Length: 389
Image (cartoon, rainbow, N blue to C red; front, side, top):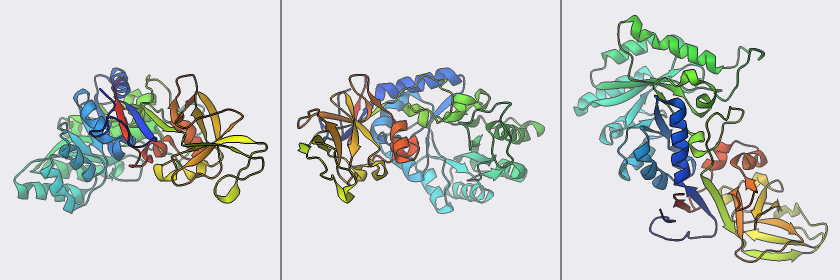
């Protein structure tokens, strides 16, 4: 596959994301090998975790079983670009949004009795059947019926005339936590094994009534895929690890690698005299004459302002510190006595042709956040360039 963004053969600006679709497929294959025979639902929400859903979804669709998104609008967009695989909208919805599920063949998350009833009524009025997955809250306290209040909810689901209850699922609050016998137990902490047991107790509803369970029972997100094999059940939901990033603290029990390289180029190179301050607020100045380069990327592109004087970049295969306050559209780096020319490659995140690397975890540490936010905050004005390698 050639480098493309829309119909253009080159990125429209020096700063762009290079997304290796082949690596995403290899990540998916590694996940599938780990969890088989469970199905795999890849989470493509938040613009495919910042990678560019318009390029990722059509490429990866033939290799996965189900797709997960967060909002109705994300599901509609996938249908509009030709995606046909089942799409679960995992986020909460309001009753007035339910007709869109019917129109675009999206699978509903029924997270309350009210939504369950509204969905059944809307499907009946449309003369259609609507697929739904029941959401059980086992300790996240976000959405879903609490595990100790599920019996009436599950009874209600059996009575629905126009819903196909295709699945039932829960979500872990701390799946990256490695539990040990020595770990002190805290009553205010939702342990993955505890949540898993609660979910099993909920699922006992079906055999107690002599019923088969819904065909898709799922609980495992990225952290649970790595740490908790008993959570695989019928399907898993990789998000972060599909994009090659490990949850903090989780076992690296599946061989995945990052598929995104954030690149730019030097647009200005100059010698800054000793003690001359650089950028807004005059937060940094060189101790001696030093070469400072300007890179056309800033917090308007998702390169966090709070990384000021903490981040590093790779220029011509070597790592250098970012200096001075990060601006909306550009920032500076100090090369010391080294040289750089207009147009030289700069890597903001990813691996150089040598051994140097800047990972999403590095940017997260410099910004005081998580790799999730790093990936999903690369703004829409940064072109995504898709390659298959």
